[in-house]
Image 1 (cartoon, rainbow, N blue to C red):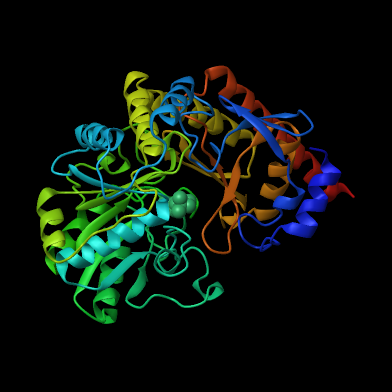
Image 2: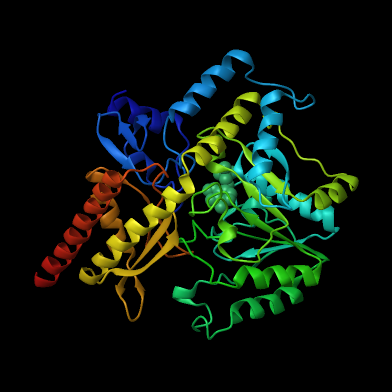
Length: 447
Ligand SMILES: Cc1ncc(COP(=O)(O)O)c(C=O)c1O
């Protein structure tokens, strides 16, 4: 397709994008024609290293030969099936997933999108506890379905969408680099959580049902909660009869260097986890996972969750193959190696470029927060815009993220199969981008 034709379609047939959303400006970006491994190619034949892993759902890689092969095979036998009858790929996926879930999590049900799995998880917690109120972190993101998941995505302005779901409220994100209370970890003793819980208790409109959070807040700017945060939150949930739901959409299935993101903190045992993104190796399938005990109580109280395509053999077969690839290729270990390589390189770059304020994240979910002044931590939104354009022009794609008004975090999500050579190529483009932005700043100062 030619660019002129694409422009015509955009202008005539496509919904305009909301400029301040993360998709804003899509009309001016490359138009993709194909993808392979860690590379996407636009309609002009230009190649880009994909360090956003598609929409994070390509974290194994694009067109993994085993995923392509299982899709081809399943299409020939059974593409779609009723969710009122069991099918073989579905059963095999329940078993394969059950074996990698840390006990006592072992029961799963399948849905389609990540947002579906969050809705399914919240409904499950409500049915299991009899409670209603749900709290989440103020920099969190849990989906884009118009009612429940957008209401719990506090990092997106809730005033931008129509009606907010009742009994959903935010608590403070433990964003240590920019502590909301101006304190320092560990001497703070995680005061943000104590203050938040006091406020949450005052705000509850009913028996509370659950807390929901990401083990690492990805869209909020790759914020890693401090050691001990989730363990304390778990105790607070138990004291109140609430369930701890962890949204593993972006941290699950190997990406943080362990199979699940929550496993980095000892003693954390969530009641429910939600899995999506690269679970289907590029196809949309998600899961809600919980203990037998919680599943049984909820079902007794009338819980069920499904979608017309929730248990399609095609999606389930791809899901099972993606888990097998992650295990066979030991991708969590590879993700941990990538983390070391990228962080070491940024630590070196930080000696040269004042702009680098913080380097954080785990595995292949990494964030570099840019500031114009390390002391005051002034967000470098403009500089990041320039670095983003430079990288895109030179063949590297990533996303810019941050909490609420901030858009000053480079979020790097290379697929877990990325080679050292590809990592070094991406780092070299970023190094040049920092130098170019630094230079243009000096030139601007001289003028
Ligand atoms: C942490 C998290 N949860 C849930 C979702 C929603 O997933 P989906 O877009 O597949 O509905 C997202 C989407 O980016 C996410 O980042």
